[in-house]
Image 1 (tube, protein in one colour):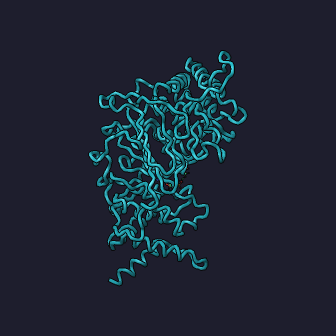
Image 2 (cartoon, rainbow, N blue to C red):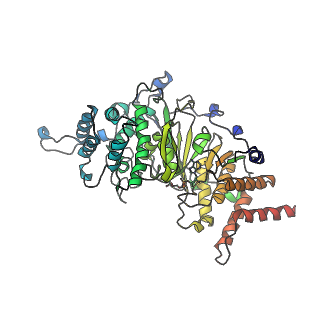
Image 3 (tube, rainbow, N blue to C red):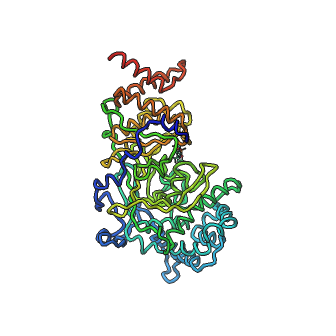
Length: 522
Ligand code: AR6
């Protein structure tokens, strides 16, 4: 509400008191290249303020990203008549694009020269749609495409050591420069990554998200979907425009870290014995994780395939976040699908665009001038954690003990860490994945309590929900209810719900009764 009266009624922990990365910047660990941390730039040079690729020896194996310029040459008996390598073909096609005056048709032709096995499968309708209706108003593709092709061709100079795959059940991190990311994304745009187009079960990368942009260009000519994809393309082209524009002050010059975190099951909390009280909660129907949450640990309502449908037709929280900060998309290149005890943390991405609307009403709004400060390693004070909730086909399933525990553990894996910035979150798992926000709010509050972090919770316009969570949090804290107790009540609630003849009770009503009973015993 905007009336002064409703403001007075609203009492919640002030957002200004919540800790951000800048408040805790002294607690940052130095960037040390270790066995579990691959740094793709030279750390000696960065101390002098210069970003230079780290030298190494490339490999072509199942532990590393298969880069297009390393594609093995097919064996040939006649050395003199050896067919050109895949990279030679790619280089030739992209080189033609750098020469200028490119229609979308030229882009399609280039991409198909080195992806000929997909010639009956791939279509480029969304790209044509964008090119015909929008490019004059937005980004001038005639000058942008050549710059993007040039950026893609810089790959062998920019990436000089292997990029490890962040595979399941490994704690592994990669740090790279924003320029390196832009080069990898330019390659993704031109669909140069080998072995990444086959997503059938059992294929080499079936456990990885897609990375080549072909699916973003395709469409089955549904006009509303075409228009939405064109809005996605506006965000993507604006990003490439910024990173290829030498005069643009927003041209990025920092680093970004991608860290896969796996906590072995034996080290997950024993929820029934966590005698810790809840932490502070700021809750509001206004504001968003992406803006008001800047500097906190910002939750990505993720798919286990990081980025979800960002390169397809998905357009909810995760996809929109990835369009505002396209550097996040590069995580799809190397992040194997998340297991139940895992998350991906991304530190330092830049925000390039503002958008408006949601799902079917989504549109690209305008460039965003990101003034977020950098840490000592040139990473922005922005940190995102991707945690994937369970997708409940049948919402009733979420009250089972096992599912509650799975979500508690997943949230804990995301929130755990030495740097106790507040968590910026909201209705995690409660849209596309059909969770109950009242249960998910409690689950996240419990995981935050065990991780000793405060929380900012944005209910996305839902005032009623904000009030309900706020008063639930209030009675829990006034009565000093600890996580172990809450966990036992949730288990009881789940047993109660499991009995078919019982009507499902309201969770907060059930907990209030328990608190009433507890208070009467004192
Ligand atoms: N800030 C705060 N709250 C938000 C925001 C925001 N920016 N955006 C949405 N909400 P959803 P899920 C609220 O459906 O259910 C993607 O495809 C809003 O109330 O994005 O976890 C992923 O790739 C919304 O209904 O998350 C996964 O595949 C609710 O948060 C899948 O969706 C949930 O947002 C995840 O689905």
